[in-house]
Length: 245
Image (cartoon, rainbow, N blue to C red; front, side):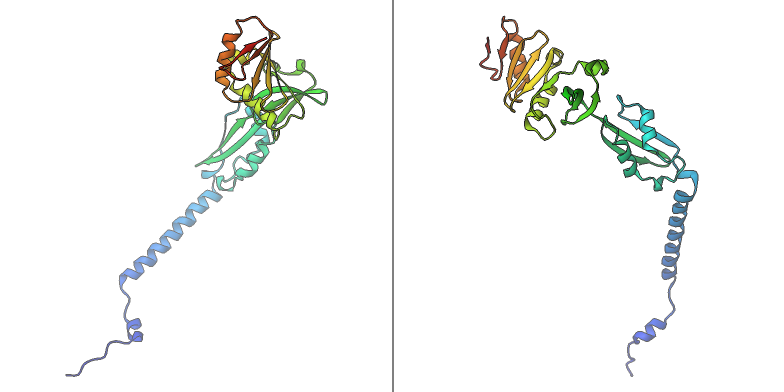
């Protein structure tokens, strides 16, 4: 018996191909057609174009102003919308702290706005500026009377060289933000010569020596009890050891 040699590689390559290979090729072609079709729908038809623009988070800034500045291209294919460019334009509005622009398929652009939080007002170059929680002066008025009513009641910040990078400024802003409502509404001025040298002036003219920005809730509670004692200066920098003079 003569043993036959195994088929060579060339012989194997010459064998007829089975139907499995053609099924794979057919599936690939079909996938390419589907992807191409979806791409054409997304880019070339109005089915996935901008038809709705939503603004969320805005209160102090009018929605119409945001939409005008955003300049979202209505009718443009959603995939061609430059969300970063829209966010950059909206963030130029003074009262806007941050912006997030997202796409909602098939046809919506959502502009989510985080507005600045006004904390104090201060005199700046002969005018009145409004400083936010980050230490940025983002609004300027000719006088207090020219300010909206809700900004007129902000406490005055009195200190040297206030600014976002100043630790004393940050400490003072932290105190004002952490004050309970009853005390914030009575505070007309916050002054500071260092991060641990913060003082509050109340509507009554009395002074609260606050110290640093820690334990504001404890200090406020100590001051609440202490205000029943006659005096002009109330030291609550250490809530356990208060004094009145």
